[in-house]
Amino acid sequence: MATCIRRREFIFSLGGGMAVIPLVARAQQPSMPIIGLLGATKAQGYAAQLAAFRQGLSEAGLVEGRDVTIEYRWADDQYDRLPALAADLVNRRVAVIATIGGNPASLAATAATTTIPVVFHGSLDPVQTGLVARLNRPGGNATGVVTLNLDTGRKRLEILHEVVPAATTLGLLLNPTNKIVTEVQSRDLQTAAIALGLKLRVLNASAERDFEDVFALLKRMQIGGLVIGTDGFFVSQSETLAALTVRYAIPAIFQYRAFAAAGGLMSYGGSVTASYRLSGAYVGRILKGAKPADLPVQQSTKVELIVNLKTAKALGLTVPMSLLARADEVIE
Image 1 (cartoon, rainbow, N blue to C red):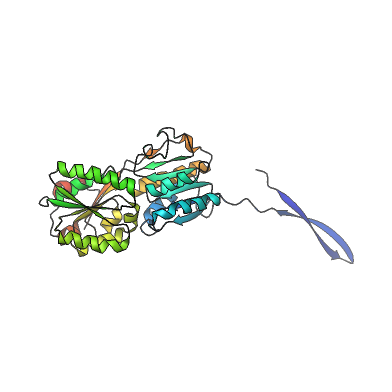
Image 2 (cartoon, rainbow, N blue to C red):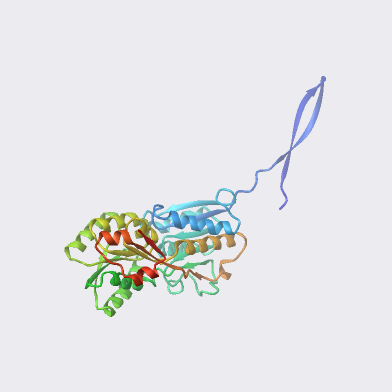
């Protein structure tokens, strides 16, 4: 691209005479492209995801602050704020919108624009939810990455049952404001519980203030363990949830490593590094000229099982050796 220039003249005196020297000044360079990042929750709890996203961008040769600017919009766990935040990014005329924190952000972004490219990140089938027309050739302005975190919900229930085989009733924590995901998880895990000969008690939380009541109810009802459902709000509260499971002595399993690292018993789900790196790479490709319509929706297939053996011992649990052998990481 040719660089535009503008001419200025500088006049100065030399030996009593006047000289006119033309100066050439560079015009202001075009501003960096702006990525709008729409988050359903809070930035807390998403450091690993953001690092992986930036890694994907760097694979396309793009570095935040040097080649691109990222404008962050966080809904702070209030999903009803997402449409307005998405509209704000559209009005800002960002070059591309990337979503973080699950399906509520993805649906808000694709509803806000049919022209600005959208790279979504979620756990539901994007064709069934209307994000794209087809997986292999999306055909519109959106494409993205789908994780296995919703599909692995049944497996989390099975793994927890392996660790607490004597428990006849387990709990499932869901966020009722994430309606589509909640309906799918409740149906699938109820079916899985029946197959295992278990009773499953569903508990709801949509704000941090709800957690104490939930865990107090778990203890009163003598529920033997807890599966924490797939939800961006719960991801942002991983450390808080882990601390509560320790304080109330509740064996629990969640989707991401951050939960187990903070003291939760186990995590099993899609790799944060793998899925968000793919999102960042797709954003980079779009900024380099690729069309979302031509980029097939990707599925991150890498899953990780993390077991916190220290927490297991504190809870008086013996983790089967067969399960430890399958673990990607054991925290001691």
